[in-house]
Image (cartoon, rainbow, N blue to C red; front, side, top):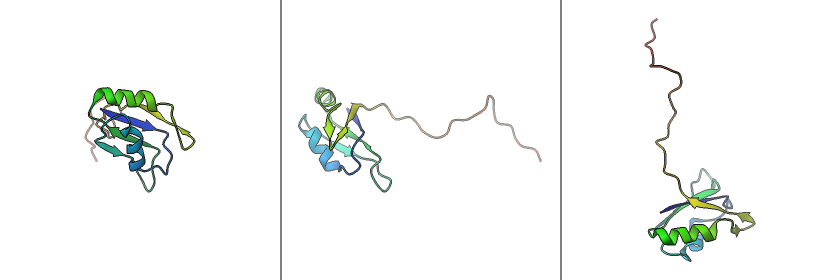
Length: 95
């Protein structure tokens, strides 16, 4: 199960986040997206659904370095990209 962890301190490392969740079971991967520095959220993958649910329950609302974590099951990723705007098909331009 993939877990979303929001409101992370910007200086927290993936190793520290892994250690926080390892108390609840096996952690297969941890990712904190960065663009020069942390974006303030991350993802934790745990193979056991029951262990992941226990981690979500225990970690949601927990304080980590004066920041209250927001923890939940991650939503499925969307395909991304810009949506087509307008009501109909694109028309060919004529010059």
